[in-house]
Length: 182
Ligand SMILES: [Zn+2]
Image 1 (cartoon, helix red, strand yellow):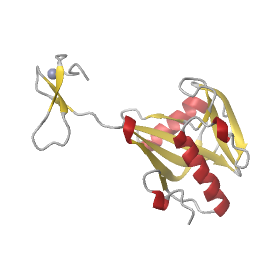
Image 2 (image 1 turned 30 degrees about the horizontal axis):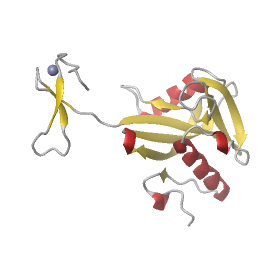
Image 3 (image 1 turned 90 degrees about the vertical axis):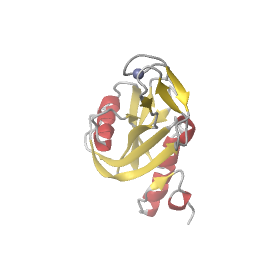
């Protein structure tokens, strides 16, 4: 941040007593502008022994397969955001089975939350940012063409959970409850 969103004056990094990190402070109005991680919300849509994936039509990872997901908007619940992204990218409607996990990427200040969802409609289709929407049997997932490590993380866990008939909650920073072999 270089300019104050309130008054437009310049901001500078300043150490504030009793705060762990330097903060952006406006030299005009003295406002402290905190910067916090962004939330991405997605859904892992399933039906019978298949998962629904979207082929990305945008950079990065164009042409690779992902799940419907995107940045939450202000005014949305986590559930609202997941539903909106599924509609926008795949014309998909669903019922939520459970909040399936979270995936933290502290290096870039992002946290992804993923719902496991049952596919409700049959007329899902490629929409914004998507060139194809396809069901994949869990034994036939295109592992070498998955867009992001986070998507691979949830898909791998789902295949394992589905086969063991035990849907757990997964977190990439909590391996004890995640992709363990126990
Ligand atoms: Zn200001």
